[in-house]
Length: 210
Length: 210
Image (cartoon, rainbow over all chains, first blue to last red; front, side, top):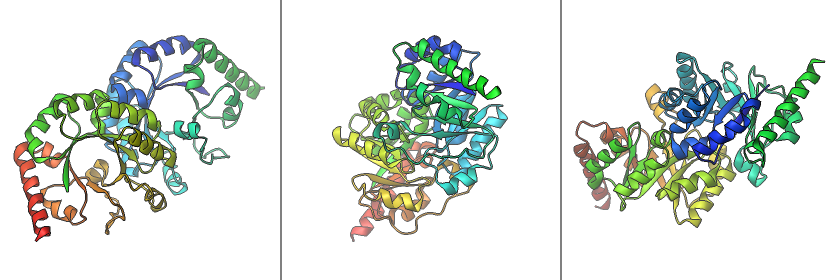
């Protein structure tokens, strides 16, 4: 299980400072959609330049124009990029093609995907599938029904309001990636918050191996 | 019926040059998603600064984080912004709220919206509803089934591969806005292409009034 740190609603220098604090305790860096839409793909390239050894995910949330959007994300230095599971299948397939050509990866964001669409998406098993409680759903308390069981996918990611307290519940699903945002980025002591989550996850992993 | 010129897959200076050529024949300027993701909200503010009297739509394609995304778009000078109809309803409602507070407008992009979701969206009658054949669907020829009839909405926009030849078909649905992209932006003579579409639309309108 890897920890992905999601960076949102901040400037690029703030994002870089945040990662510097947390970097020893996280596996992947997520350049959030808000950074990309506010500052463009420079947000990806500047962060990748500072942390060349950390895999970077660009949360492009692509819904159309897949080849163009994935190409600019990967060319800016992203190792993985997101496409919306609710998008037309041709868009998702184009993202997978571009990623394969460039030896990069795709994360499919399952936010608001219908059960019918979910069945279709399951054929794309090279992608990481991200179960996602959105920011707006968290803030309004209108959380959509979550998948109780584990999705039948090889590669699972979990996102949306995950904090120290909800870590065991998330880890129960045995995801490849756990995405943590404000529980680290908005903490008074970013380094301490990241370390706490890292340590808790190590303990859970060790427990599993006993 | 107004003509909205969609600017995509180009630099900000190219976008400004394109609008300068076409400006007498278009009603609204669309800063495309590709410009926003590539260059950030500067793409909106720089274009608005050049054309302060033209309404500017920011094609944000918001799917989450609605208040933040719509605020940065409107603060950059956009008069209208897009949210995906496939997004959670709380996200769409937040966009409508932010727009109302700032006396701006919302366009709901209907790309890949299910019939069930469509019914729910119809309550948001202050928004412009955009029937949309996506770039990826156009390029792959995998066009999804189009609505044959006219949606029961007050404010309709049509987008996706609309050119001089398909203008009468689009105009038949009596939309408030017809969105034209590459038929103008990729024309050898941008001004001439814009004028041709403008004139054709004037003729159609005059015909209707007879």
